[in-house]
Image: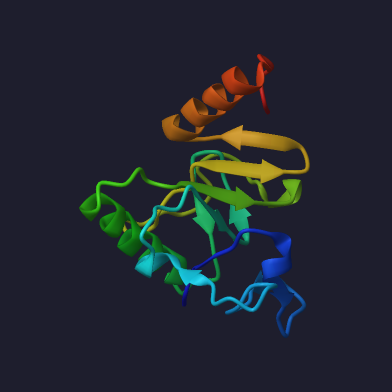
Length: 145
């Protein structure tokens, strides 16, 4: 599994299941950068899942591929003294389940925030901090939920 750095929606192509994913090359024909080989840190990683809870639990498909990648990226970021990226899950509202329902093991990496059609649910202190900073910068003092 590779994570590729995209800069626009044009960098995505539909796979065999009609799900948009990064193409190895961008819309201009340039090779997309593998984030594990990058010279600069990633700000946000968007994560898929089957279900999520409000404590940061993410239920995937059971292979652990994302958790392995996330742990390796976390180690790379610490080694290079980079800020850790926010781990954001995109979900439909019906994918968000009651608190502490998602089983978590020591190797599972929790998400920082959920984004659904109902709004944004900050989970970690890093996500809450980032959202407060965004509100200050935009002049918007409203809660985002």
